[in-house]
Length: 366
Image (cartoon, rainbow, N blue to C red; front, side, top):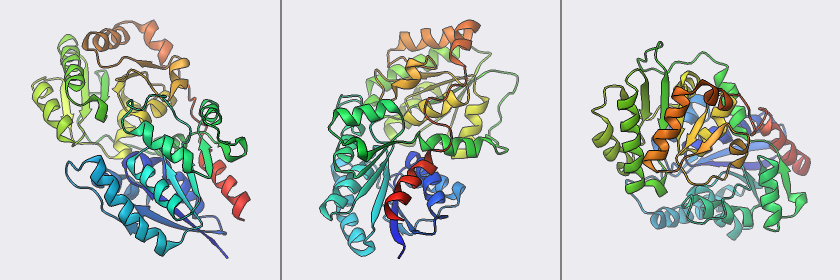
C-alpha cells in the first residue's frame, strides 16, 4: 500500500522551497503525492508552481484583498478540516512560517495526522519580530512529528524548546536545491537593464515594516538613487497597498529607480545573478543571495537566519534611513568592503536537502 503524502503550499516562498521535495517524492514508488494549494498568495504562488510543473490537486483559493490574519486563519481552519477528513493523508508536509503553515499544523493536530515541518527551528525569540511568522513557526514546531532543520543552529533551537533529538534531522535548506536547479538554466529578467551599469536589487514587503519604517526605507532608497546616478535600482514592488502605494509615491520619480510588478521566480533569480548588491527584508533572499556571491543588506533589526550574518555575507541594517544609506554607499564605494561580503558562501545547504527530507520519510514509511 502506498502512503498518501499531502504537500501544502500557500505562498511563493513555500512553493519554491517545497517544489524539490514534491518533485522528488513523485519519483518514490512507495509514495502517493497530493498537492494542496491554499493560495494565501494567489498570483505569486501560481507563477512558481507553473515554473516547476506542479499542478495542485486541491486549491482552496483562500486569498482575499486586505483580509485580516484572524479572518485568514479562521477560513483556513474551516476549509482544511473538510479537506483532511476527505483526503486522510498519512503525513502532511508544510514549509516555513506562514499563516498557512500554522493553520495546517493546528488542523492536522485536531485530526491526529502527523506533520513534517520543512525548514524547522528558525527563531528570533521575539514574538513581534517577524510578525506573525515567529508565532507561526513556534506553533508548528510544537505540533510537528518530523522536524527538518536547515542548519545545526536551527537544530539547537529545537532542542532548547524540548524537541526530542530523534525527531530532528539537519537537512540543509531546500531553497538552495531550487536555486541551483534554476540558476543552471538560461534565464532572462525580462526587463531592459543597462549591462554597463551596476544593479542594486530591492525587495521589501514584511508586515512589521508597514507604516513609518517602510517610509524610512523608501527615503533611504530615494537618497541612494540621487547619490548614485550611475547605478540602476530595480524594485519589484509587492502588490500589498501598504507597500505599493508608498513605494510609487516616494520612488517613482527617480529616473534610475525602476519599479515593476513582482518578478516570476526565474526572472528574479536572473536579477539576483545580475545584481551587484541586494537590499531586502526577505528571508529567502538571505538564503539565496550568498550562494550566488551577492552581498545582502537586511532591512530588519534581527534575523532567524544568523548563519549568513556570522559569516559576514549578510548584514542587518534595520529601517533607519541614515544607516541604510551609509552601509549601502560603503559597499558601492569600497571595493575591499564589497569583496569581504561577496564570497559565494552558502551556509544553508548543498542542493541535496530535499533528498535528505525524503530519506527520513522513506525510512519511516517504506
